[in-house]
Amino acid sequence: MGKGITSREEDYSQWYNDLVIKADLAEYAAVRGCMVIKPYGYAIWERMQAVLDKKFKDTGHSNAYFPLFIPKSFFSKEASHVEGFATECAVVTHYRLKNDGHGNIIVDEDAKLEEELIVRPTSETIIWNTYRGWIESYRDLPILVNQWANVVRWEMRTRLFLRTTEFLWQEGHTAHATQEEAIEETEKMLHVYGDFVENYLGVPVIRGRKTENERFAGAIDTYCIEALMQDGKALQAGTSHFLGQNFAKAFDVKFTSREGKLEHVWATSWGVSTRLMGALVMAHSDDQGLVLPPMLAPIQVVVVPIFKTAEEKQAIDTFIDALSTELKSKNISVKYDDRDTQRPGFKFAEWELKGVPLRVAIGARDMQNGTVELARRDTQIKETVEQAGLGDRIERLLNEIQENIFKKALDYRDSHITEVNSYDEFKAVLETKAGFISCHWDGTVETEKLVKEETKATIRCIPLDAKEEAGICIFTGKPSTKRVLFAKAY
Image (cartoon, rainbow, N blue to C red; front, side, top):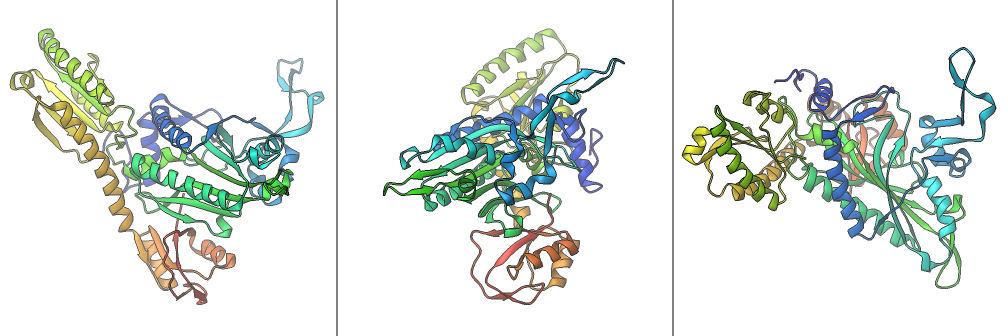
């Protein structure tokens, strides 16, 4: 354990906060519950954005932008939606400030808005009000739109990246002519998210459906990807919602079908947020600092020169110039840390803390011997290797590191899925092992709520690959046809 970071064993929550702040990902803002995403943290988010944006465009979607402010009346049009967000809404009531004559700035009471505006907690209402003007016939469908935006949900208890009052995200909103098309879209985007989180973040996920109680407000069905963090708690990493015709009916969005009938449009929405940054930190990192998968690391390779004379430095510079050129031609990002204000040991610790996947150290003796020292961040294994073929070796190692990070997280996840058949077993696993608990449930909201009240565990999802099997609910003893996954969650 180093750099003033609390160990995971000692206090996992404090370890996470220490790491986010000391690794320069983010810090708390002057506004309670909000955060400043620092350049190093934002660079990771930009890499996530770039990959996802390409995936969205490759699946036929286009980006647009809708207003931050939503008229309050829009929220009253879809009852379950407003009920789901009512307690989290920030409301704008006035549009001007004034000086009170004593040097104080106060709200101008004469500048009251005719209708209050809600600061966007999610955009279904304003987008479906807009779609009404875009859709007349089946020829206008489907509409496949995504927006990158910020949203505000007034949170009482916050944690950097995982739960903040304002956060960044993308939200897709699509309109379709048929129910089948909309469901196909919902499922397709779930798999886009699942593949992204597994292949880029290196975090294994379970794809499933939410129960009625855990569904998005206003949705007919919510699909999700659920990940497991190193403390045995689950994290919802992305959601995709089949909205049926609820929003189309609320905002009177109809189209003339091929048969000439007037019908309501079918809808979906789907999103992931900066919460993925929290997943990235918590799934892989250790007591020394971040462990970043190469696919998302802003710096994949850092080179630290060790020298005493200007001549030694010049020889190293020449070698590293050529190596950097080769690595960049392979789309590998490299940083040459030749600062003369810090000693090599300080640099090693700093880049370890920041999770750079691979470190290259090279000194005057290495130059004589034709070698370098390579240090992997994931295993912390160091080895001295030949300079010949170094670019190809680094490329292979980065692929190995990406695979190893995923495998380690997968092994942990798989060893923390426990099947239980009684409520006593269920409670024992929650207390001693945590992780996902696979068990039978009678399908009622009442049972789900009672279990949550007693244990704080919720049904994370009904896995898409859940096998049909006869069983009895661990809580009520009533019949059940498949197992669901419970866990304590973020």
